[in-house]
Length: 366
View (cartoon, rainbow, N blue to C red):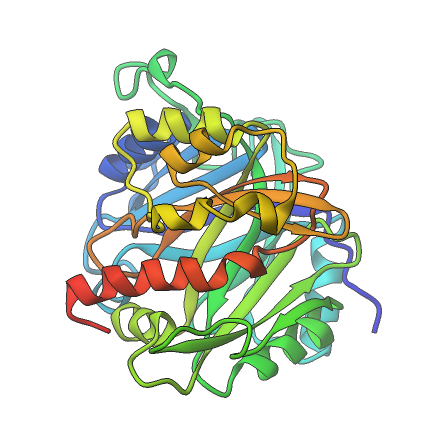
C-alpha cells in the first residue's frame, strides 16, 4: 500500500479547560513562545486558542467559551489532552479522499479558509477514540497560523520574556489503546496512511513484577513521523496503560517525545522552571558504562538530573520523562537526545516502568 504523502507533523492541538493558563504553563515551564491568539477579539465566538512555538514544534491550545461548544463534553471525559495531530500534506483533498477510500472515517471535509494573508486548507479523519488527524496545507498561506488567529498582543503575553529551553522537534508521539486493540490500530495506520512497522515490544520486553504492556512503533515512508501504539498486557496489578485509559476515559495520546540537541542543558532549564521529572534509583547509574559503553556525557551529571541512556547498533540515546502535566495521570512528555541511535529506550523500560509504578502506588492506582 502506497503511503499518503505526509511531509511532517504540522502541529499538535490540545483541548484544555483554560487555554490562557495552559499557554502560561507551557511558556514558563517548557520555554515555548506564544505567537498567536484566536478568540472573541479576533471574531472567533465559540473558543479561545493560543499558538505556541519552539524550534520546529507547534502546539495549539483550545478552550470552549461556553457549554454550547461541540467539544465541551470532552473536558469532562478526558480532562486536558491531545485532540488532534495535524499532518502537513501537498494536497489536502487528494489525501483526504484517498484515506476515506481506504476506510478512514471522515470528520471534516476538505475546506479552503481564506483571509487577507492567503488560503489555508484542511480536512480531518478519525483515529483511535475521538483523536483526529487533520491534513493541512499552508503553501498558499502567509498568516501567523490560520484564519481567525492574529499575532499575539504584547499586552496579553510579553513574548520577549519567553525563555526557550532547547526543544527542537517532535521525535515521536505515543498512543494508548485498549487491550486487544493495538494490532487493529497498527493495521489502520498501515492501510489508511501507508505506515510501516519499525519495531515491536512484547510483555517480556516491557514488564515489571506487577504489570506489563505491549507496543508497536509505526512510521511513515520517510521515517519523519513515528507513532508508537501501546496496549496493556496481563499482569498482577493495574498497568500504567490501564490507569491512563481509566482516567482519560478511553484511548488517546499518552506522551509526546520532544527532541533536543543538548539534553543536559534542556533538563537543567526545565528543572529550573519547576518541571517535575520521574526518577530512577541511583543504582541505575552504577552499571551504566557496562551496559552502554563510553559516552560523551558525564555520568555523574546524568545521575544528578535523572537522565536515562540506551544504545543500539547505530549509537546511543538519552531520555527523561516528566510526571503528568495535569491532575489526571494521563498526558506527560519525554525529552530525548539521539546520538545515532534510532531506538526507543528498550534497555530503560524496566527501570522506567518501576518508577512509574512508584508514582501509581502513591496515587493508589497500582
